[in-house]
Image (cartoon, rainbow, N blue to C red; front, top):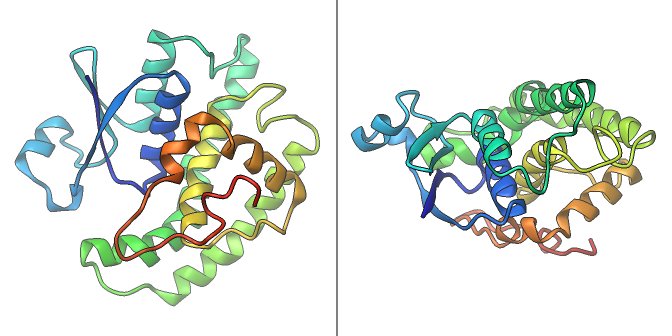
Length: 221
């Protein structure tokens, strides 16, 4: 059995879940309170972070390393394109969302509103929340610009870049922090990816104390 140690609203865990689901790999989900620093979990990943995937008798950490391992060992359906230039663009955008978007938006909104409460780290910093709410506008506009030229974020086919972006935005959508009216291209793209079977598990997530908005699981939002 493939086993994923995860946190439901973590965009990095969600990216891995989307890849596994798209590849039709059955997985056992184990929620991990990583912030408690248990000895057992630190043996799996000394960095003390999720996701951690147990697969093929191996224990893998770091979402991008996990996703590329799965892509290389289960190549169908492909989530990385054929040519080096196309793969470079996918990896650029994955890094954009997992680094730039994460630090400017996800960490300022999701982590302030949810993670601090879950981990007992205090109350949201209003300055960070304000900064994240402003920064997401730029990112949505950039996504809209990309989608004005392409069918998907990195090109003509759906790739890991789309799953990385959707993982972050779905986490933020759960806490009502995405203005889907800001850009029609982005809204249409999200409706398209949200309707994929791979997304069903994520749309059924329920985090105690944080109910999702009514539109969260609505495919025709």
